[in-house]
Amino acid sequence: MFENLQERLEGAFKSLRGHGRLTELNIAETVKDIRKALVEADVNYKIAKEFTDKVKNEALGQNVLTAVEPGQLMVKIMHDELTKLMGGQAADFNIKGNPAVILIAGLQGSGKTTFTHKLAHFLKTKKFKRPLMVAGDVYRPAAIDQLIVLGEKIGVPVYHEKENTNPVEIALHGIAQAKQQGLDVVIIDTAGRLAVDEQMMNEISAVKAKTSPDEILFVVDSMTGQDAVNTAKAFNDRLNFNGVVLTKLDGDTRGGAALTVTYTVGKPIKFVSTGEKVDTLDVFHPERMASRILGMGDIVSFVEKAQEQFDEKKAKELEAKIRKNQFNFNDFLAQLAQIKKMGNMKDLLGMIPGMGKAVKDIDIDENSFKKVEAIILSMTPDERENPDLLDGRRKLRLAKGSGNTIQEVNQFLKQFEEMKKMMKSMQKMSSAGRMIKGLPGR
Image (tube, one colour):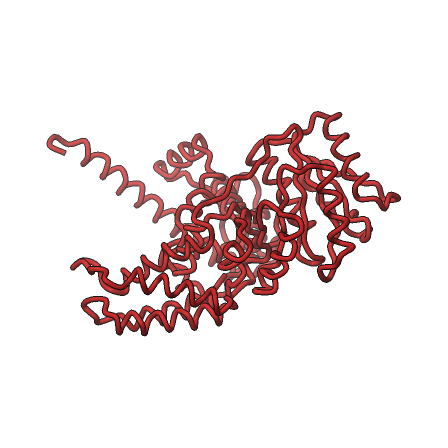
C-alpha cells in the first residue's frame, strides 16, 4: 500500500544527503518535494500546504546531533506530523452496551457487507463477544443472501426479514432478538446508494434515531481517494458518526484518504481492511501507519499478528524436536498453517523494517504454498513422521499424487533439509548464548 507516496517521499529526503545540518534552503527544497508528493497522493492542496508548513516550522532551528543525519531528523519530524494528521493515537471502540449496537453506513460498493462480517468475526475471536448481524439493506436481496452465507462461514447468526422493506423495523426486531438470545453486540448493515441522496440520508437517520447506536461507522473505499473524504464529510454532517473504516487499503497506492479523512471530517479512522479474507481487518494505529508510509515498517503489528497465532506449549514442543533433529513434515505443515493465518505474505514482509522496498517489485505467489501442501498431503502418515523414508519410488508417487513434477518434489525436499539444518544451527547458537550468559562475571 501507498507505494507511490513512499517512493516520492524517499526522493524528497535524498536532497538532504551529504548535508551536515538542516538549513532554511535545504529544508525549503525538501518541503517543496514533500508537498508535491502529497498532492500526487490525492491530498487536497490546502491540507498539503498546511501540513508542510508545520513540517518546515518544526525543522527550522533544529540542531542536528552528530549521530543523526539531517535526512534522519526530517524523517522523524515527518513521522510525528503524519501521526498527528491521521489522529495521533488509536481511537476507542465502544461495545459496552447490552447489547451494544453498531450501525454501518456507506455508499454502495464501499465494502459495507464484507466489513460487517469481518467486524463480527473480529469481535467474536478477539474480543470474545457474541455478535448478531442484521441484514438491513432492503433494496438488494443479494446483500441479504451474501450476509447469510458469510455469517454461516464464521458461525455468527444473521437476522433478516426478506419480505419487509422497513429498515427501522428490521433493525429494532434484530435488537430484540439479540436481547432474547443473550447476544451482546448487534451489527446493523444498511443500504448503500451509488451517490449521496436525500432518501438515503433520511432512511439511515431514522434507523439511527430509533436504535440509538453505541457506534456509527462510516465505510469508505480508500481507492477513491479525495472523493472518499468528501463523501465522508457529507455523511458526517448528517449522521455525526463515530469513526471511519477504510476498505481496500491494500490496493491504495496513493494514500490520500488515509492521510486526510480525520483532518477533514474531524473523526478518527477506527479500522482498516486489506483484502477479502475474514481476518484482514485491523485496528487503525496512526503512528504505525506513519512508519509504513515512510518505509520504516511496522514491526509492532507484525509481532502482534505472530502472537495471535503463537501457542507457547506447541512452541516448546517444537523447540525440543528441533534440538533432537526430529522436525518432520507434520511440524512443517503446522507452521505453514500459522503463517497463512497471519495474512498476505507480501503485506507481512512489508511490516519488517527495510523489507518493504525489497519486496515491492517481487510478485509473491500465495498459491506457492498449495504446491508444498499438496506434496506433504500426498505422503503417508509414516512418511510425514520420518522424512528419511522417501526414496526414489516414493518420490515418484508423491509427484503423481500432488500434481507436481519429480523435479519440484526433489527441490522441495532439498529445501526442507536445508531448513532443518539452519534451524538446528540456530538452536545451537541460542543454547551457546544462554550458556555464556550463565558464566561467572556475566
